[in-house]
Image 1 (cartoon, rainbow, N blue to C red):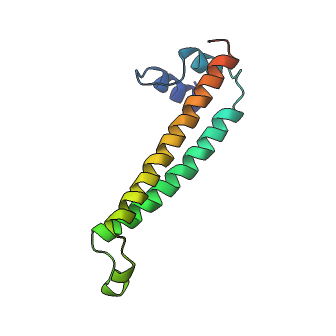
Image 2 (image 1 turned 135 degrees about the vertical axis):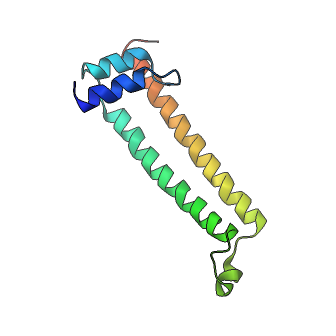
Image 3 (image 1 turned 90 degrees about the horizontal axis):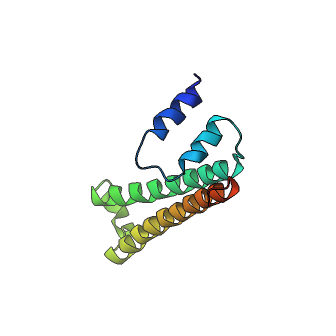
Length: 112
């Protein structure tokens, strides 16, 4: 059993998967077009990096890590709310992309 087979096996045993069981079977047989999945992973990586960056900036403000010279640059509550909304929207768009990829894979392999 390869490392990939082991990961697929462990992932297939969970109850919280979005992709149909048949997609995992097709992947196990290596009969799947991985481009949509790789594209979704690249988007996930980009969005996650952006969200982490914003959250780190907000955390540094909240924890008082900025010195008094930077106090003029601190975000006001409205700006903080806007940045948190941006994080939420980004994650929602990522979820939509994953849903679209799951639907595409289901359609492509005759599940719908």
